[in-house]
Length: 98
Image (cartoon, rainbow, N blue to C red):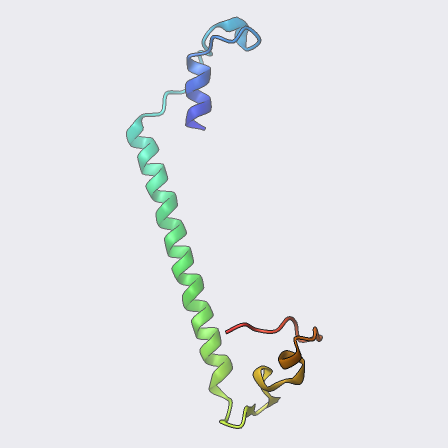
């Protein structure tokens, strides 16, 4: 957006406002621009960390009920399933790649 506003403020194109600068185009300071960029990066990093932590907890919960034979309380695990071993697509979704 900053680039668009800067281009409008210094306009010389005849088909935009008759080649005159656009008076309502705001000037965004470099400090404000830097604050916005750093804020977006911080939010992205935090969201990524939360997503990876959630995925680790889900994997730990999936593996918590299994026995060494590969059978948990609900039956055979996905890793010991013949469909996963052959790569066949089932109603359980695609095979996991660990």
